[in-house]
Structures are given as C-alpha cells and as structure tokens.
Image (cartoon, rainbow, N blue to C red; front, top):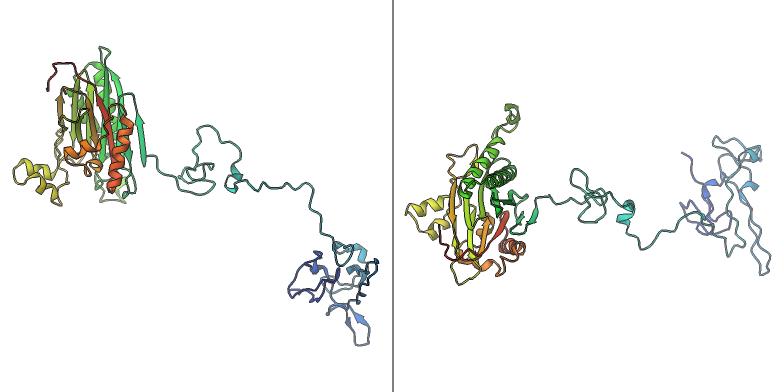
Length: 440
C-alpha cells in the first residue's frame, strides 16, 4: 500500500499540518496529490523515487502589499504509481488547488449555485413522504405520515401499528358498543356486533351481540368474531321476517355455534405441527329491543344488566352465568360470596365450540315498565362491577341519551380498575314502555 508523504506545512499556503491530515485545514488543498520527494542516487544525482521531494523554502511575507510567491505541485518532478519519472507532466495533470489571494486570507471554495438550501424547520421524518398518499391509505399513528406495510409497521419510522381490534367503537342511533384489549392481554379476543332492523309492521328493532373468546382454546379471537357476526346476521334476518324476538334469539345462538364449530373443521395435515390444539370457543350474550319487548340470550359467563333511568328504581342482572360458581350457588352448596371467592369461580360450564358438552341456549323476555338502558358486557367489565348496585353506579346518568359515551365510561372503569382482561360493552337504550305494560 502506498503511504501519504509526511509534510509539516501545506505546500499551497504554508499552513502548519498535523500527522495524518488528508486536506489542508486553511485552503482545502488535497495533500494526497503531493508527489514523492526525490532521493539522491549514488552518483549524487537526484532521483524522484523512494523519498519525499525537497520543497523550496517559501520567503516570509513582508509588510508590503506584494503577495508572497506560491509554489505549485507541478513545479516539482514527480513519479507515477510505479515509481517511473513523469517526462510529460502535461499529460498527467495534478489537481489544481484553490490559490488564496494572500496567505493570511485564503479563498474559500465556492458552493455550487444549484445546490438547494434545506429548510431548517422541515421535519426529517416526513421528508420522504412529502407527496400526499392516495385516499384510504393507512398512515402511521406515530409519525402521521408514513405508510403502513402489510406486516403492520410504518415504512417511514418503523413504528409497530396497533391491531385493528385493540380498540373498537361503533355507534348507531339507538345502540353503541366499545371493545378494548385491556392492559394485560397481548390481543383482544372479544368481539361485538350491533345493528338495526325493521319489523314487518315497520317498527324498529335494535340488536347487540357481545362475545368473549375462551383464552384456553385455540384461536379464541376468531371464534368470538365468527359468533358475533353469525348471530347478528341471523337475528336481523329473522326479525325482518316477523319471527318472534325470543325465538329469533334462540336460533341466532345456534347459528353462532355453527359458525364457531366450522372453525374446528381443519384438514388432518393442519394439526400435524400442533397436535395439542383444541377447538376454538367463545361465550355469547345478546339483547334485542323490539316492539316494547326486551329479549336476552346467552351462553357462558358474559352478562346483561338492566339499569333504569330513574335510579330510585332497582337495577337487575338479567342473566345467570354458566360457571362453576353459579352451579355451586344454584345447588345450595355455597353462598354467592363464598363461591366467587373460590379460585374455580370463573371456570365456565357452557360455551360455543365443537368441544362443548351440550349446547343449551338461554333466552329470557322482559317488558320493563320504565325507561332505562341494557348493559351487555363481558367479564372484563363486570369483574370490576360485579354486584348490580356497583354496575348501576358505574353507568352514567345520561346513558340513554349518550350510549357511546356511556360505553366509553364503562370501559374506562374497567381499565382504571386494572384492565386484567379484554373489555367489551354495549349500551342499548330502552324507551319508555306504554302505560300499563308489565313484566313478561
């Protein structure tokens, strides 16, 4: 490898140099262009190969206006990379350095005129994305400019994007629902579906379905999504045909069960690498408000609560859990406090899935005599407001007028309590029933 000539001063402007300098700090002269110093041959003749050349001493600048003479690298003999003397230096010109007007004030190299000046206020994160993305393009939640690739990461800043189901909200005129991943789970295994339908007489019907995936089962998030969609579609179709809401609810739960069972129908080869997988499973609770009637249906431990607008009236839990604790209480073996304090309390005894023991859809029909709201939720909420009175206190007073806000408040109540589970809640306002209506 060739070595850089060791110089004590710049050959162009005489600026002192330090060991290892590649360019002059004053005039910018390229020190790699300095030729090797000629060596003296045995006969006393100077040779250009092997040693750095002896530079002539520059005269000191005086106080006159006459600039000091400057020596150029082409004033001295040089060699090429093989050590051969250059006999025709004009054919191999060395780079010309910038010549200062005086040693004390060397001229700075001029900047290219066409070089654009960067905007000091510009955000470097958005420089690569100045063009507006096409409508509908998913943008990063962090830098707000980068496109999101199919893997869920920002192409600009690399930030991982939240999953679509981590937090979901939906509002219709007469119903709203919110679902959140919670603070401890790595994904949201809950799902909901809300919709409106028209009965044959033209009167409205409102549907709310909430499902909770069984975490110990395989693909619980897929199970809850499939069940909520199937139940919602079945209910709307049956109500529009004129089917009684309670029968429509029963049939919708069966349709949801079929949808979850279908997820277990995998080819044998699909389980070769995961032989210990079990069938997807979930719970379900739903509510229908139609024709002055409130119909509830459920399987599992997701719940529905009735909370009247007039809080002087009693709030009521409308469902009974399919759980170990509920069985102990029903059999008279434990009181409710003892049963729910047991570590087996939340073990469910009913669910939707191919490995369910026996599917028993529960349905109930009510005719409230006053206005109120129905709270349809997973255990991610009622674990933090288990008693009816606690749930009634958590529901905002204006829940009937602001169902989405109320659902948000209830999810926040669970998150403030610890958010140990996914949280999903639907709030369904029930209008004031005609005078004289009683419970069914």
